[in-house]
Image (cartoon, rainbow, N blue to C red; front, side, top):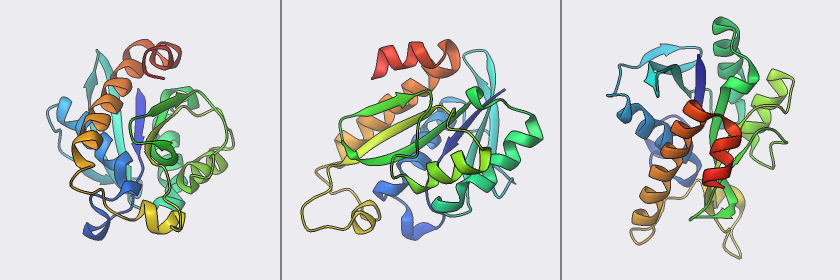
Length: 185
């Protein structure tokens, strides 16, 4: 089984914010699975399905972004999923809004939700897909920027980027991290 984790903050106040693009991309993947029902599990919401002939578990941690590792750890341990079979979808304000970047491993790179996951799992060997929401405008704090919403003018480009991210998730499930990196980075 593959575990696909979308990062974001729970609650309507955060819907549509830059910080919640992980949730948004995961919702697109769920739509491609026929919108399976969500269940409250592992301090989050889960949905199960089959993508490219493989079983997948979708996980939206509801622990707040910076504490996402507790939810991911619980799901990983319950299903005994190896780290290479986990993909974390998250925002990255250091990438422009037309860019996604897949990596097989590495640091949290300033993304506190991803950093918490890596710390709790005890390894940097966790694949991740960073979704560009930047660049950070001059005079803005990173927190204010990522908790802000996209402008009406930005929305079409973001929607297209989220579709591309969902395509990359499908490629990762079907062909692995190297093939997905080669095709989408």
